[in-house]
Amino acid sequence: MARYTNISSIATTTLITKGEKVAGSLKKITIANHDNSDVVIVKLYLYDDTNTYVITETTIPPLVTLVLEDNIKFDSSIYNLKIDTSTTAEITVIIT
Image 1 (tube, one colour):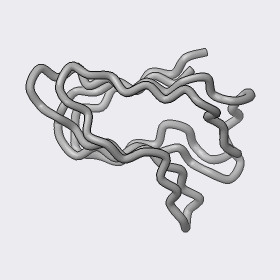
Image 2 (spheres, one colour):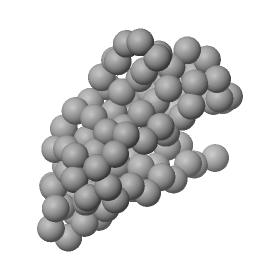
Image 3 (cartoon, one colour):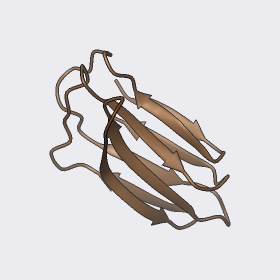
């Protein structure tokens, strides 16, 4: 089942909480910047309450979508999946 998270502020958002049951590997993570004018810098990472492991840190221009779909898997009993955003651009994160 897909998870949808809308973000429109400078924030750290937990997408998958440590200890949460995640069935199998993730197929795809889509980060869509559907703001008409603002770019956004996103950092997608794993966090184990001590260490940060960056998956990607990139700038997403207005009206552009970043798709991650190659071998996405992690141990959700150890790590939180988090995203940091740098602006108030309106983005949607879809995890399938």
